[in-house]
Image (cartoon, rainbow, N blue to C red):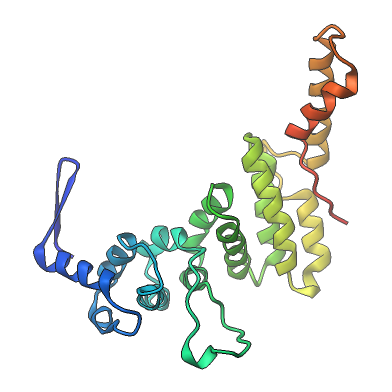
Length: 247
């Protein structure tokens, strides 16, 4: 793609602009124009397109092509599309299919380990629940030959997270990740989910919960008996305790 940047304005060449406009307006069955596009043009097309039933097939084609090409510069835009659901193909109509309906998830898996930082940001961030579920699935697929490590890395991130919401999302991701462990790794995955991978800042979930309890007790004591102990501690703990049941 030919482009130049002036200040904060991006000036796109006329041929590229016409290409992008054509790609956005293509009906579902007319994606031939995209078949001759470069990887960079496909990324630009995806980045500037809002999905709808008319262009969903074209978006799917672009995503699948970028995944097959292992095109790492596409990782940010593919991450944004983790919850994009492709339409059924004519062959899939009325039948049960084992193929995923989330092509961006598959594309990030195909790109591999280079996708991991972006997937982790997606898990921590404010994307939809489906996008975060797909991010966990892709994370574990990339770690499929070392699934306990995949779980442990998520748990370590949870241990080290200072933001309560981020910690909650990461612990939720740990519980989801356990479902993606190979049965032969089940015991190791559960052990990793409890312990994580040690680091200077990390601590176990039980130690973190105990600190939260002591903190709430300290705050109640300093209130000078203005309210009953549990009427204060219950909402306090609800805000900081993250209940994760791991056998």
